Structures are given as C-alpha cells and as structure tokens.
Length: 149
Image 1 (cartoon, rainbow, N blue to C red):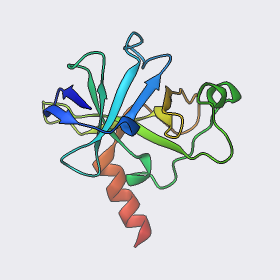
Image 2: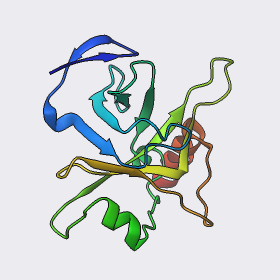
Image 3: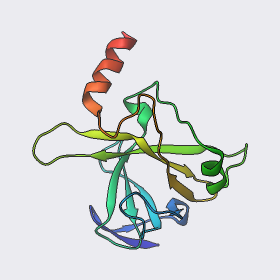
Image 4: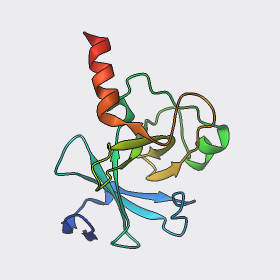
C-alpha cells in the first residue's frame, strides 16, 4: 500500500509495517495508526502517522547508544500489547534533532514498545531509575565505545 510521508513523500509499504497505538503517543493521543519505515540514514527509522502526513517521528533502538538499557514494563502495559511468551517486543526511542545545533537526544523515559506480531504499540513511561527524556546520543555512544575498549 502507498502512504504519504512527511520526510519522503509517497512511499510503498507492506501491511506488516503498520502499528496501532490504542492510546496514541504523549501529546498526540488522537493519532493511533502508524507505519514504521526505514530511514535513509540507518540506524534510524521513521514512525509515520497514517492519520496525518505531517506527524512523523525519528526513532532509534536504545541499544545503539546504551547497551545497558533496560525496560520495566507493568502488567497492564503487557496486556495492552497482547504480549505472549513466544513474541518478541521491539523497543524504540523517539529522537529529537534540534535545528539550532544543540545535541541530538533520545527519550528513554518514554520509549515506544511494539508487538510486531500483533501490530500493537504503546508508549510507556519509566518512572525513577536512570532514564531521562533527553539522552545525548553521540555523547553516550562515545562513552559506550570507550567502555568497550
């Protein structure tokens, strides 16, 4: 099927790329249908609203810049995702890319969790712990590389 995207105009996607967020995303609660598409700049992806062309988010796996990332999901979150033991959940962080030259950041306090098999997604809020709404991606990748040496 063809969708209209903010970043790339019309794009052909497979039905398997669609996701439904029953609660929407924080600040965008009225938008529920999305498509996860590859960005032209890996390792990023685009989460494109299917309801509104101008709503799109750059997303990234937290493990790209934080190999210690952990997710604490409540039972209600797992229920919303209709998760079963045989299903793998995909976790992505929303990325902010400021136009004024400030550092690119990722939100690990409110990651997106998706059950790709059931095509369901939810933004979960992790309270407490080390996760913030603005993790400097390049700085943390640099630290991660230094730790691995």
